[in-house]
Image (cartoon, rainbow, N blue to C red; front, side, top):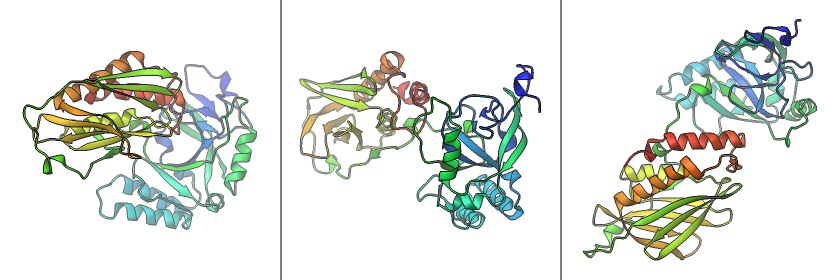
Length: 379
């Protein structure tokens, strides 16, 4: 077979490993076994055939297209899952998907409890799942592709690993010299290109938020005129994986350590989004890798005035509290976040150690998503 490096560089090229460059639509739907050791970025390697990277992703995977499954009944059930996923409003949607998975894999591959049903299904597997895959499933070993063109599958090989350990042993043997530590594989059912999925803005979600049961307005009435002071907010990059949130209200100050292991920025945007929507009282927690601090906004009898509280759930200690103008609170946090991400934020230092993804990719995506979030551009 002609070596792919002999092909014109500006046209379609054969590759049996490495990063896919084109549109993956012709491969869909497929089962993806990801999290495999790094195989380098070659176009061609006899030992690494089948170890592909999806566009814009860093992990290596085996791709098992449903169309290449040799068992007609399993192929039909998996295609039925795709059809079900395309109509999420149908009655019994999740139960139907679980039933099809159960029939296709004899109960060895299933949806985790409370998992989302989206373009990419994360699945939980048992030890005998891999033995099931050896019965009729094939993985992709050769494609022809180019930037902007559909990926064309050219060859497959039977799935031959009866356990996760056998697959990891093979993948580890063919790893590149700069491969990191070994990890357990993950299995996904991909039915649409994940890159086309429109994700909600952080501020539209409620990740990490708590609605306190205590409503102060039921017990207290503000005595006018109340002393309402402005809140000063500042974010500071302090080192690899760390930043500080500085808060000052009158003569009271508190510094909160922000860790990229428990990245608080998406939650901060969600918290501000809830405040904008009037979903008060609202609380979020910041994990400082050992201690926690909570930011809570309570309503008062004056709709324009809120009680802002910084405390911890581990003790009665209160680090900062005071009455704030609601509009000034929102503006102070938004301007501080925008100033931080437009200037001092350094993706190379914020590696996303707590994320199951490439560090710099996570850090750059965080910067983009924060600056594009309408919450930072609103009043």
